[in-house]
Length: 204
Image (tube, rainbow, N blue to C red; front, side, top):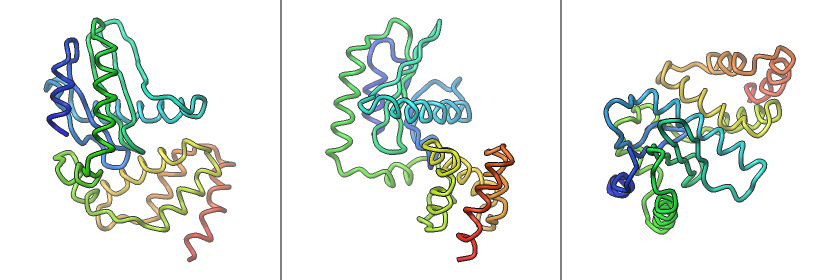
């Protein structure tokens, strides 16, 4: 994958490329050092949310382009939860970049490279995130949040779960996760609804 990202960077006008996972954060980047990882993670989260929101209105949405005075950001979801975004000069060759992204996406689906492979090879992924295993309770809590916040709940829950694991590590307590979710919901009435939905799940 690193070679593929470097090939994208070689396109005239492309400053650099990032691979971002909603679950694991920043996986790969060949941007100059001035682009700090924490900022790239913040950008990746926002782009993932925008892509998810865009697909609610346009099922066939592929790319998202944000145009600024001095730069352009082009983002695409390679697979569920995995976003690639490219930072370019305004004069970049849009058609060439789109064609290259199409080829990359085809290769991505054809190759045996898995999401887990990227995580295990990424210096940005924490030990806690790499060792995390699917948890039925987390899936049920996420589904309950969707009943309160709608389609964006999955992305919001994944971000909160990631922060929760980073803060608590192996000693992370479920009460701390719920408190973070309540803070994110914000609305007292919706918080009460979520508590009512979560209570029987926790009793299991």
